[in-house]
Image 1 (cartoon, helix red, strand yellow):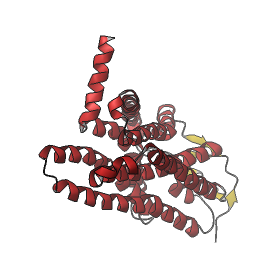
Image 2 (cartoon, rainbow, N blue to C red; image 1 turned 180 degrees about the vertical axis):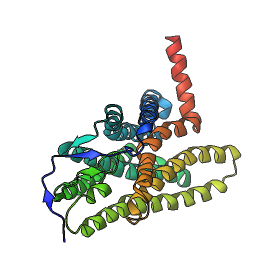
Image 3 (cartoon, rainbow, N blue to C red; image 1 turned 90 degrees about the vertical axis):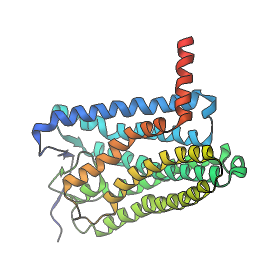
Length: 310
């Protein structure tokens, strides 16, 4: 039997209110990571746009990923910072719906964009003679556009599904942003079909692309190990390991969050898992790709020399 439903005009994001003494610490750490995320990803975008050596499909996808990460963190982090600083943890019904929509739109797009990047590396290493044909500008643009469009359609469907549900009297979301699993706990009646829809979404946008990425990397590693040139092996491992590390960080935390049974982890554990793919991974992406990539570091120093000369 469902609980009595009521008209919800807003929600309260509890966040980490159970540890009030650490609110300013959370604010400082979150502000630092947000600034690093913005600066790092903006730098990647500028370098891949201005340096002709980086006008390749690989860096086209990396530029898309950096732009996506800026948008992704900007959907949730500013509101989190406001809540921590002011103590006002309310969010309107419309604001919550918009936050949910863009979180899932950008998260779903990132899943497929990482898959497109894996395909680019697979073609470059396993089929180098066909690379210019299989990864021409039209195909790479189509893969990126398909990633964005698929995320948009998925997010529209799931956001509509959740925010047309009748909500009960409680409007406390035990999370730091409007996410679908904690929102479903506030809905009245039987929500098993909605939970199954979220699970199927996670399979389609997380598990299936992750398995394809793993299959592609099995082929990539096998090809690299057969290379006779030590320098060629080192360069291939360098570019691929950066992408694989980002994949593990993002898919690992997001997959556990949406594929686990509801009672597997405590709400606090869920929050830290969410912080991993909404805050930590976007900050680490530019660090991983710049520190482990000689071409990006070379483009950075070329740009610095040009600026100093001017």
